[in-house]
Image (cartoon, rainbow, N blue to C red; front, side, top):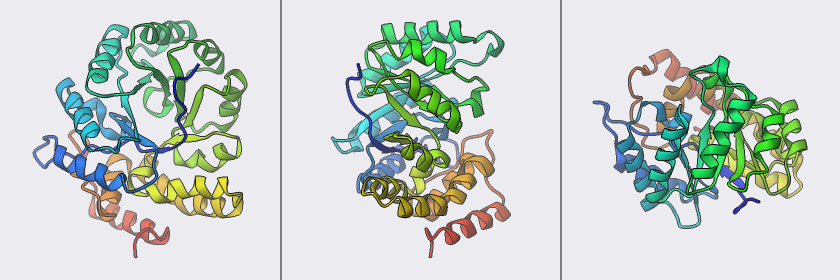
Length: 298
């Protein structure tokens, strides 16, 4: 049974880097203080949009510490702690727990992709959950891992007392329904992309971890608020208005696009870390136009 219920919007926080590639913790905390003014449910440190793959262990620990210091007390602190081996994932998860992480989002291992079938996935998550000091959530992000965790595997994993949910970033609505059919109400099924936010709400999903919440947190929260108030038309209209923004800052322009959108909207986005490339001027113009069209910029 879940030890807590995750309801609402959580951003997979961008990680600000200085021009020389170093971590800018003061900018990170400034962003959190601004996000604290919104009604978001918590923060994910070290997600895909955090450029977590480019961070060393000490940077990860420092980011979690800085997040705990700056976040409001009522915000859930999630951390992305999935690495390729079971042993290293457990080690990192418990290190981050020591500095304030409340739950861990664990990526599906993918390097040996053709050997990561259901049996290997189930064993991996069961072993991590057995040895983790904090609850874990499964992270299904096929875009990056090219690995999909099946509803049949989730059916087995959802019974583990220390596996309290999953973030499904596949955007696959039929599969989302299949996940719902094999879990109980205590299991936190979260969508991982704003492109699925309104359909997921309509299906009864209560929470989301999505890149768009970095730059447009109020809109992401408002979609759920309107839906809960029974204003489905208003919720859907806002969702449709935000859809092109989400497409831009995820699929089209990636992390650099997300950071530039954040910069335009007043956040301290910093630079991307190499080997990611900064945006061209044409791309910057395109993003500005998309934000204007969505009513996020005047």
